[in-house]
Image (cartoon, helix red, strand yellow):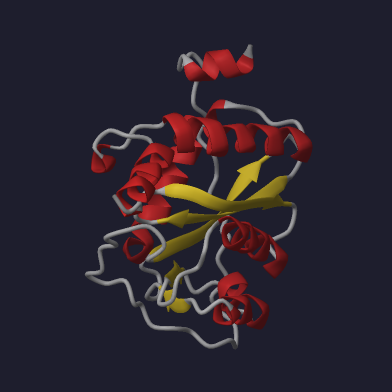
Length: 208
C-alpha cells in the first residue's frame, strides 16, 4: 500500500535535517577536475560517484552510487551503516563487475576521504580509470550525481518511512533498478529512461 501511495504521489513529503557525508579534511592526494567542458559522447567515458544519507526510524544509513554520465544509468550502488571506504568500494566494484572499463574512462567524484583513500584510488588505477575530483566546496562540478541524488530523495526517500536497513535496501533496490533505471524519463535523453537510452547506444555499436 505504501508503495502504491508513493507512486501516485499521495504521501506528504517530509523535510529532513542536513547530514554531511563528505569529509575532505584528509591527507590523501586530491586529483584535478578532468570533466570541465567534457560532454561524454558514448557510454563508459565518464562515471560519476556520490554518497548520501538515508534516515531510518532510529539511525542513519548511507548510500553510495556510481552512474554512467552518458545515460544517467545507475551502474553501481551500496547501502551500509558506515561511511567507511567499504561503502564507496562496494558501489564501485558493482559498476566494474557490470561494465567493461574502457581505456581512458574518467571516474569523477567529490574529494571526500572515501574517494581519495588509497584502497579506492588503487582500485581505479588497477582498472585503468582516470581519477577526477570536484573543486573544493563546488557541487556544480558533480552536477549529474547531485541531480540524481535530488531525484532519489524527492521521488523515493522522502516519501517513505524505512523501519530498518533491510527494508531500506529493498526499497532503494526497487527504485534504482526498476523505477529509475527502467521507467524514469529524462528530457536530456529524448524522454527515454536510462536503461533504454543505454541499450540504444549498444545497438548503434553493433556492425551492420
